[in-house]
Length: 271
Image 1 (cartoon, rainbow, N blue to C red):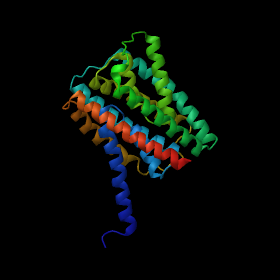
Image 2 (image 1 turned 135 degrees about the vertical axis):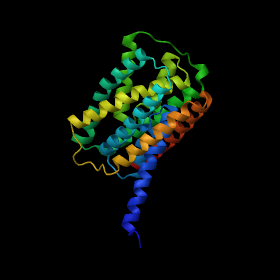
Image 3 (image 1 turned 90 degrees about the horizontal axis):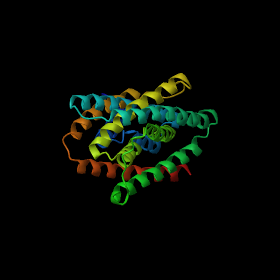
Image 4 (image 1 turned 90 degrees about the vertical axis):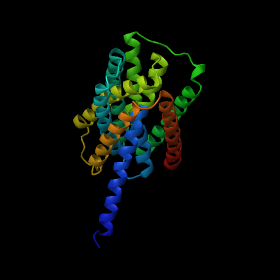
């Protein structure tokens, strides 16, 4: 035999984790959900890693995807609202430090993995449900164009805290907030969300590096997921400029619905 059973299993596992990174990043780049909102519950569902390791795998993959997507957006001369996105990004970084700090305290210090897992999945399910309701009946909600820097920064703080604590990178939250508070179109929300995600995930990885570190984490699948994130981000960002806002909205809504169902299942399994 060319391969032993163990080697064959390892090849299958490598392909599986590459596909998780690839598909999540492909959809994330197209719909502005970042990929973390898909990776986190999927890895929870697989049950191979603890919450701290999942956070690093997710943040690294999403960071790779957002880097590629931003390079592509620059070559397409797409407009990024620098003031809004930069202030939200700064707020997200600060809020992300607090969110990750709270997460590390309960998971790393107190070892409350199951309890935090239930809280994460439940909160994420509620957030995703609220986002689905908003976009499904968006005509019933008034959209704003907020210009006050303090309000924009505060929005970033809240987004950063929730994103870091939930381990999702903030994608769907970013898209909803950008549409609601700044009246951005689907494509504009996606691109500006990716800009914010880039900095929030960079901050999350730096925080882990200089606080808890990576000791004890099984990161054997990290590079396969990062490669998947790069390839998915490249293809997804290309497709973003070839489809209509309506198609982007459909991809976003279907993705959020599927992830919502996965999170509901994860709540049940944690309990």
